[in-house]
Figure 1 (tube, helix red, strand yellow):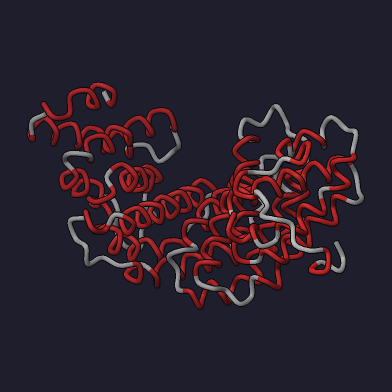
Figure 2: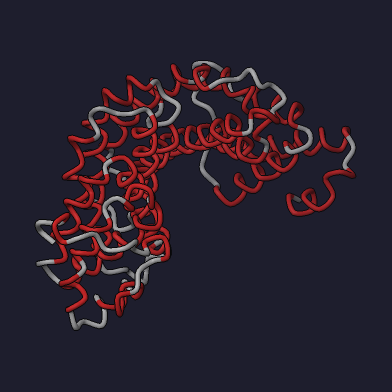
Amino acid sequence: MRSLLGDHLPELGKASAAAVVALASQEMTKSKDPIPEWQEAASDVLVELGKRFLNKVMEEVLGKFQPGIVPHPGVLRTFANLATANVFGMVPFLNSILGTLLPMLGMARADSMKSAFCYALQRFSESIQEYLAGRDQAPDPTIRRDAFAHELGAAFELLFHSWIQHREPKVRLAVVEALGPMSSLIPEEKLEEQLPKILPGILGLYKKHPEPFPISKSLCQILESSVGMGSRSLESQLESLLGTLLAQICAPADPNIPTSAKNHTELLRCFSVLACSFPDRVLIFLLPKFEGGSERIRVGALLVLRHIINSAPSQMEIKKLSIVSSMKLPLQDGSNKVFPVFPEFRDGKFPKFWEFPKIPTPAAFPNP
């Protein structure tokens, strides 16, 4: 049914749409026991209909979302996916939905419900970000970030201080995936206050989960939010951040984990965010890695260096002499893993934007 609706939604009349909305809603919620395949299919029908008949879908689903009563997981899933499928239509509803949802968080006992709440908060936050980014084209350009800050800030605090310690790994990962996009929407002072606890808490999850991609993605989003607000406490966390990120870069890829490549990309993005704000600290951390340690660490450090040269060129340009000087030892390394990482430097060649001007007199460089 969802596939058929997707192909013929413009041809559907209001009466037929109302009948399908009622049927899908009933099928989604008639069993309190989880029947994922059936309930998710019914939710997907509602989401598809919500692309054109949003008011009718919301009228039906909001009737099953009552204050003080923990909703059916399918209701939360439908809200979440509607927020992604119809951003401009759903975001104006989110203020009242969040107001009703927030008191329910403390009532969630089952792991499945906690995961459902986290998924909804994640999708709501992503939808709000997209709405704000395209506010000029939005039907209501008066909606601003601070309209959601209080509710999301309270939810963020509960998720981080309570739910992230949950014994069930799926719940912990659901929490982490929600915290990332929420971090840019909560009050800045709340993020700044929590940052000294948030970053070590998220870094510690790498040891508990074999699939690190959700952790790296969320961490990068939190770093972007912290840098964006000019965090004063981020710099004190740099040593542990850089050490953990490099260890993840150097870890052997697991072919059984399909998101290994995506995780690698997110880790490099984390280094880019930090290099743009703290270029000296990042280079002080990276460059000594070329002189000692294992081959794996040298390769990892070179991969990171190559990435930040390209992703933060203005910050790296003024550091080129120290970087090129640090390349002497790696270029003498006979390993077929270390040497090819920087083919640009072979035979004295440099990246185009690093072509040197005339060499200054030796006196300008007492320690060449």
